[in-house]
Length: 76
Image (spheres, rainbow, N blue to C red):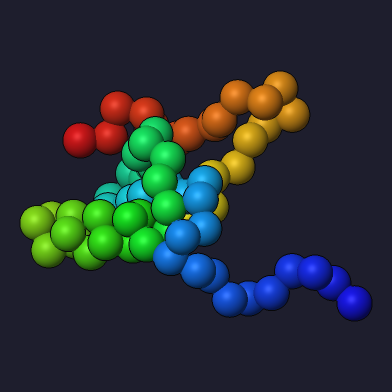
């Protein structure tokens, strides 16, 4: 049996806020790492400010070299 569950706790670390435009082919992630609860709250705040975009918390992934990879580090 796997140790992984589909339940995410607010205190889980290693999350970033990802974003994309609704009607353009632009997407990216903010570089600031935070907990799931903080990322979810920040995504909701940004969605209220920028109606033309979609935001969500996303687990931060590392590349084989250990550095984080982002589509656009200078997002907004």
